[in-house]
Length: 306
Ligand code: CP
Ligand code: NVA
Image 1: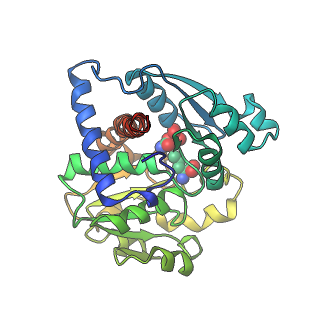
Image 2: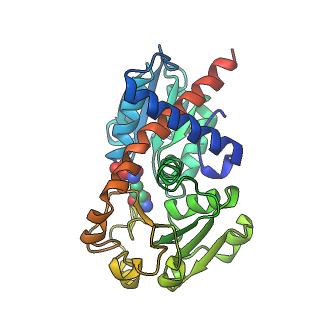
């Protein structure tokens, strides 16, 4: 594994190994600093075009804990923000740093960066994908429910944003049922579903159908970063709030996940967010462990090249 650009490129075996290693790193960290420092002597760049709390902090801490150093570059502060092409930025970075973590709009930009830089590249969120978040969520589900296998995972909200798309690719590879509930025009297109070609996914416009008997109820903002002015889109989501009434349809031992940040009173109520805050903030913490697992894997690939 040279890069992590999307869940879609990971095999079932690779996902399992990344989660297993994340769990090992989490256990080790509870005992003290890691002895093995796979990023020793390396400098990683974080290039962010969108805001971030969890991803930024967890990667900055993770790179340092694995022995590396890290520089955070807001795209506004580098020439990228003034229109320098991503391929030129990539060719400069590739000669100076050992790896890059990128948060931006277009998926094609992280693909191009990985190609032109030649260094390990991690997608820290694009409009299409949020692979780091999914790995953290899977770790959380395994910690809480023992396994994701044969579970029903409901995703209530924008059925075609970076989170729901990434969940779909995870469902295709792993053995769980994903039920997505969204307004009709925020569900994946027929052509997308045809391309996915998975029996593990069902689409619903009625959220109670998706949540019926679900073990995990997952939600995300109705308007993703960059869509904040789309009031007409947001207006369609009134029936898609994760609230106490909706959760009555779930398996009684369900958990609720939210990748955060949350807009209380919109996609989730204050009451539900606080009632499930234990698991939701465990999910946030697991970003650190999952991403250290990714970083260690990419470093191992790099050293095996020499
Ligand atoms: N969930 C997530 O990626 O959070 P941030 O936007 O704060 O990084
Ligand atoms: N779908 C959200 C995820 C935030 C972590 C967004 O892209 O803004």
